[in-house]
Length: 252
Ligand code: ARG
Image 1 (cartoon, protein in one colour):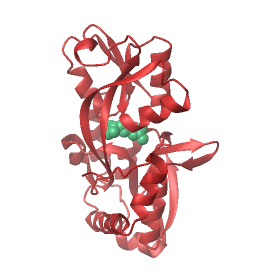
Image 2 (image 1 turned 180 degrees about the vertical axis):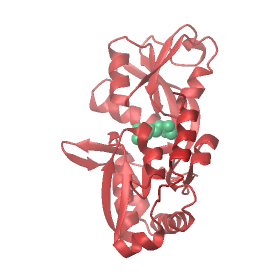
Image 3 (image 1 turned 90 degrees about the vertical axis):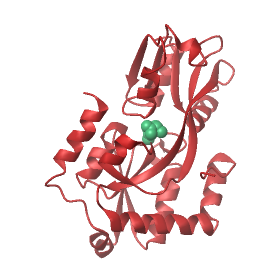
Image 4 (image 1 turned 45 degrees about the vertical axis):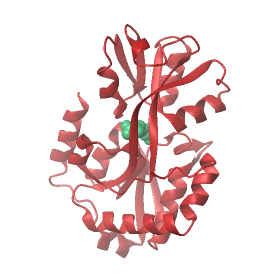
């Protein structure tokens, strides 16, 4: 099924579902956060523990709102649907703000900006031109898929459940290239000690990456934005960003 169709379905399915209001969340004392858990270093598992920049930031946001944080993880492609079904209150999983997604959910202010790059083995296709006649892999449900499909002459765009599987496909030669967010690729290549054999190439998009609440959950979104503003002003955001990236990755 096309992503657009899935998003439309998500909206339909939420007709009777009830995401919690800010008042209900405050009364419960707990913010339920959703993420993926396979997108290092933003949200991932270190042995059994959910960690990452977005996990630290989500915990800090909950704290700033005087709420206890409770995390759930789901495959990336299910997150916006689950959000609109009220399975959690808030999603933070590196979603790029796109017009398509804006129809389905309400985004908070971006919590960072990043590139999406083409990635290939040394000697492989590292830019759009070189992708003609080649195959590329990317995570299912991501914003880079339509961009990749529009590359002139591209042979095939294959989707994978997460970026680890996409990287493995690149390593084993099942695809000629891979495409994901720059900081994620850099982190994964370093972890796997692949920096000498696999290179990060052309930027194919510049994203504003944001968390989201269910469509119409305006009071919750405002509270999140206010908490994020506070963390961006009081040094908490800078501290967390430096911890994970050695630099401040907020949108300039
Ligand atoms: N930034 C890309 C997008 O918006 C990829 C995000 C993937 N996130 C994840 N948790 N796997 O589609």
